[in-house]
Image (cartoon, rainbow, N blue to C red; front, side):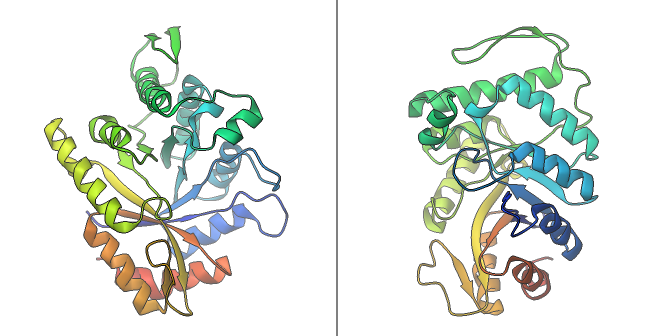
Length: 287
């Protein structure tokens, strides 16, 4: 499978940059995927993730669109199922639905949504996965979980294709959920550096095989902070930086570990970084 390359777009509403134009530029220079994170609470002016991604979808035509990742407590899973079907249909089948159990309790407390214990977060994420898939596939769907309950819920139309669901999880229980039930895994280098990430990736593939799944059917993506130009990173486990050849070598090493999609977080002049990556780095990593 050929590797794919994404780039994160900052959902800033400060006026200093335009996230929609950033996404259009990423598509123009050849990226495969554009992602937006989901932090709704905070003093920095920002757009709501789904609204911004919908606007990006309307202004682009080819690039895939990813949530990286939706904080589960913010939106009921059944509502997410409906939102995802609509955006995937309107965008011509370009959505990648990234979900996370919810990492920032302070954010959720601020917005008055459920603040769960770590074990409850994974339970709720697994229930959300079952609910979303159930609503996408069954005419009337009833579900009685600990965190989610539905009674004869009807979602129409059903998705025109299987919408991929990637999970942004880190621990062994989350990785086990990826191996059993998800379409992809998307951790971030600052929180899971390459060596432990490679071990977790191998563990997911082994667990998937045990569960009777094809490990190659699971997309293993990685959020990677990148800077092209200047000196190498002082902390190479958390930032890929240096001259183009050095960046090619580092990113190539991540692909060799088994990651099939690299989603890049950019430092410095973002437009310049997108252009340099597209012209000087990515051609050396594509087959």
